[in-house]
Image 1 (cartoon, rainbow, N blue to C red):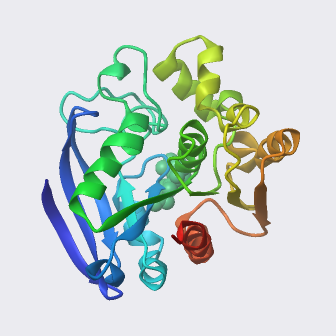
Image 2: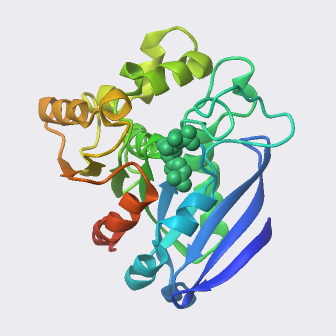
Image 3: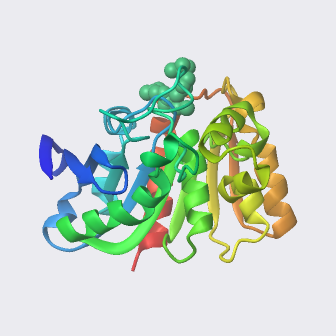
Length: 276
Ligand SMILES: N[C@@H](CCC(=O)N[C@@H](CS)C(=O)NCC(=O)O)C(=O)O
């Protein structure tokens, strides 16, 4: 591993590392924020999954999350949104290929060679974090848009692995919207039954753990009706009796201005759930 950035931030450190990922088959970058409390004791970790077109940089430079992580004693880990670099397949358009890994394990050629973001984020990344930093094994997961889908799906697929989950503007039902249909056709093939394994609304019906979901959605979001459709999450949670706090926020759009406005409340929620 190589540290390629280090910035003092709110008494702690915002770092960026480049690590060799066996799961992704390439080097990949990851943002790690170490709060001041990490000097003295192991801290819980919140994993942040970004949306389409993002790298590890968007969250660490735009969300203003460090001040809240410093207050609550949380380590923040922000991976890239896909494998990238030499030999990694890509496609035209911002919503498939590099920058658009959808936090799943692809089964179709050529994507299945590197696009294993689920396996990477759930297994390899926490193993690396917990071996190299003063991290406890209390894990939370959060994300935005495609990363909100990732946070919900990873938590639902891996009961016991996360103690807290939250999302901003998540793609809650990728099997029913254009972004998801395009990506899942490519990564998972034509069998729509296989898609349901990666769809939060479909997974909620049979979830083995009822971890409460905190979701914020801006009502001036340009993707609200076509791609995000939070009402489908509300319906799925009501049908299954799954705890959901869905907060519809007037005037907010899809951007990091929205995330920055509420990230403090999300991290307070994670801190509360992660308190040992
Ligand atoms: N209009 C955008 C669509 C993609 C988009 O809105 N991406 C969101 C996540 S789904 C984002 O976080 N973009 C980067 C940023 O705002 O820093 C584009 O074509 O680049």
